[in-house]
Image (cartoon, rainbow, N blue to C red; front, side):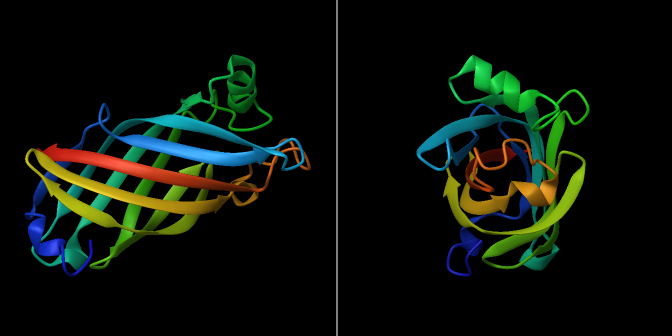
Amino acid sequence: MTASTAPAIAPATYRIDATRSTVRFVNKAMFGLFPVRGTFTVRDGTIVVADDVTRSTVTATLDAASVDTANTRRDNDLRSKKYLHTARHPDISFASREVTPDSVTGILHVHGTDQRVTLTLTPESTPDGVRFTTSTRLDRYAFGVTGGKGLVARHVDVELEIFASRA
């Protein structure tokens, strides 16, 4: 929430609209020769925008098993014990710890591991709620997702487009 646009986002509790929200990722495979693009489905989440933006909170949950790269064999491999082990770790979750006028820092929980992540936000007020966009680079090894070393790149670029309406 940038200082110039934060006032446009009305203080309220917003529910993340899973059908209008998108989480995309890209990673390199085959020794870094080609990109692999995919998505995850947002399961649910809440954004509480407070009058004092530093008191705002964000929680969100993704369905780890929803990973979709348009390749069934690869998707099944990503769900397996070698990568996300979605049978044991069905959720990817985020809970804010600190909100500033232009960013949110929180704990990202992936594959049973917690890591601190800071996201720079671009907010936009919409006729029926709010829209936030951000992107980040994650180190999959830091989350214990180490399958395919040498074949699959260590870092994953993630883009989020989150829509939420008043609760």
